[in-house]
Image (spheres, rainbow, N blue to C red):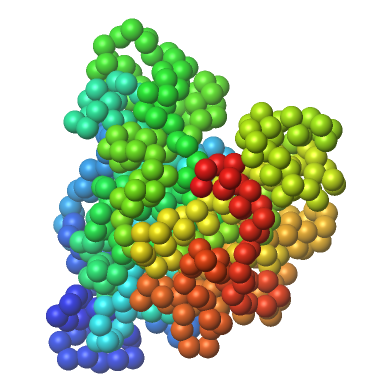
Length: 549
C-alpha cells in the first residue's frame, strides 16, 4: 500500500513494495491515498504513473498545482501573487489550462491543436520517483518554448517520468504569454513600486522557483540543487534569469537549449510606446489618467488583447524588456561585467535551427547581398560574406536568414558559455547535427506531417532535441530508429548528471570536456557522440567580429 513518510529532510514518497518505519498507510486517490503531500498552501494528492516504461507506481505525478494566484481582474499585468491556501486534500490529477495564446497552424511542426486556454493558468506539473532514504534528489524546472507567445508545459513530449527515473524531481510550468505576459505601458509602470512594467511571464518563473524553494523537499527534492532549463524562448528565459538580480539564490545550475539573450533588447521607453499602440487598439484613450488607462485595459477580454497585439504591431517587437527591475541593464552588459548569477551552465544548439522556423528571404543578387551586409555590419560584412561563401554561391537570398539564425542560436550559445568561462565558472557547450524524424511535436495522436524530403528532411531542426532530452522517444513521435533511442538515453543522462553535480559526465558516457575558449570544445551529437573543437568556428568568429562578442 502507498505510504507517506516523514524523514528528516522532507516528506519522501515510498514505493508500494517497500515498507518503511515511520510511514503511515494511505488509501486510494481522493481518500487519502498514495501521493498525499503537504505543501505550504495545502495538501495535494498525485497519482502513480503507469506508462509501461517502468514498474507500475515507481513514479508519482502531481498535475495542476497552483504556484501563484490567477493573474486575472486587478492582478492582470501585475507581478504574480502567492496562491490562496486550501483546506482538505486538493486532487493533483489534471494539468492546468494553457495560458491564453493564438491557435497555431495545423500544418506546422509546432502545431498545438485546439487548446482550452485561460488567463487562470499559473500551474505546474511535477514528477518524482523519490522512494527511499538515500537523500533528497535534485530538482529540474522546465520552461517551454514558443516565442513567449504560445505553448504550455503539460505537452506529452515534456512528460517528466523518464527523467524522474534517472534520479531527479521534474517540474514543468505554465507562464503568461504574449501581451498578457509581456505588455509594457506607462500606466502599468506608474502603479509599480519599481517604476517598471512588462516581463510578467518572467516574473512568473521567479514565482515558480520560489514555490520550488519552499516545497521541493516535500516531494523528495533538494531545494539546494535546483536546475533551470528551457528551449527556445524558454532558453532565453534561462539566460535572462541568470542575469537577473531577482532570481539570486533560487537556482544553482542552468541549461539553455537553442537561444541566448545577447542581442540587444528593448528598453522600457521603447516597449511602453508599443504598449500605447495596443491600448489604442483596445479603445483606451491615451490622454486619460494612468489609473483609468490601466483599469480600461484590464477590462478588455483576453481575446481582444490577443487580437489587438497583432493589429497594433505590438507582437512585432521583443517580449523581454530591460525594465530596470527584473533586468537593470542589457543581459550582454551584465554578463560582460560578471554580475550574473554564478552557476554552472550547459548550453547548446541544433545543426539546422532555421529549417522550418524562418521563412526564406526574397531572392537576391550577389551584389545586393554584399550591399546589405556592408550596410548592416560595416567592414565586418566582408568577413561574414567570406564565412558564408558556399551559401552565398548557392542562394544569396538565404544568407541573411542564416546569419540571423546563427546569431540567435550558435553565436548566442557560444557567447553564453564564453561569458561563463570568463567569470571562472564551469560551462559545457553542445552541438547536435543529428537529424531527428519530423513530426508534430505536441500532437502525439496526429504526429505525421508528411511533406517532402522524407522523415528526416528538415535536418537537425529547431525543437528536434526535445524528445531526446526528456527521454521520450518511446512516448511521442514516429520513425524513430535504434540510434535515436540511444541518443535519448545519452542526452537525458547528461542532463540529469548535470542537475545532480554540476558536471555532465558519468559512467558509460562519452567524455564531455568543460568549455574553455582556448580549446573551443563542444560535445557533438551526430552519427557518433564525442568532443570536437571549433564547431562552426569560421561563421561564429565572423559573427563575433560583426557583433562585438
